[in-house]
Amino acid sequence: MHFLLSLIDQGDAAAVRRRLGIGEQEVLAVEHAVQWLDRLRRPRSVLLWILEEDDPATNRVLFQHLDTPDTIKRDILRGVPFGGTGGRLHVLAHGQAPEIPVGPRGVVGGLREARTMDTARIAARVVGADDWTDVAEADRAEPLPGYARWALTERIDCPPAVRAQFGSHAKFTHRLQRAGIVEPAEYVEVTRPPQEVLAVLGLGVLLFPRRAREAGAALAPLVHAEVGVDPDAWAVLAQLLPTFAGTVPELVRTSGAVARVRG
Image 1 (cartoon, rainbow, N blue to C red):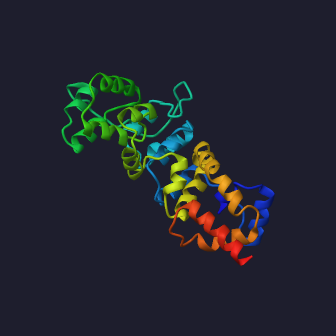
Image 2: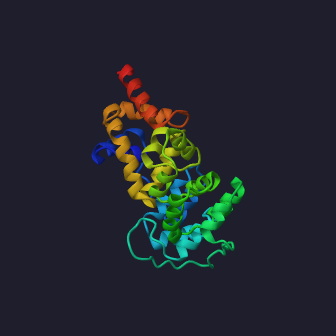
Image 3: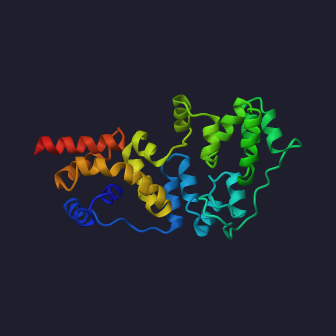
């Protein structure tokens, strides 16, 4: 509810909160927000959205987080700016960079040797932030094996231009969505249930504000059109939210329609 209410005028949002008997959203420390996020089902891209903020303190928390892949942990310690902000970050994290050995044929050679999905994922695990340009050039010179291409595509930090080089048709996009690689607008459009989606985005206001704003921009026109400042529509939405099985847009449309019928 808090995330959707942030998309309307805040004076009107305060009136809706009073009507529904809910307070302001709790402000969490980054460590606690990451812990809450870990309890929710969320797309794998969420980790990248957080890293794109290029906040050294947050990256330090992610380094300690068990679900962060070793390759990402290594790049965190190297100060990689995932958001493209320029110079290296200064991240002070407890622990050493994970050892990810490169095979005798090097990064690209290991990818070319991949003949199964498992071996491709092992080879793709070696690729660091500084290797993507070489990988893309090698693929343009001679396409990498299909398994290797998909293993690289599954990497949340695969640059968009490189991912587009590997595929762009509808089936490919659907496979990406199933693998948890999505953009914010896609996330709110296709993912269900809405209660978890909105909980993730609510935490995103702190952890990945830029991407959360993108998600909000995708939803705002629909929220304004369907529920707007109508407290009855917001009351319906609050009632439906805990058990609604559709997507967030379907929830918003249904809430507006029910309120109009009742009115």
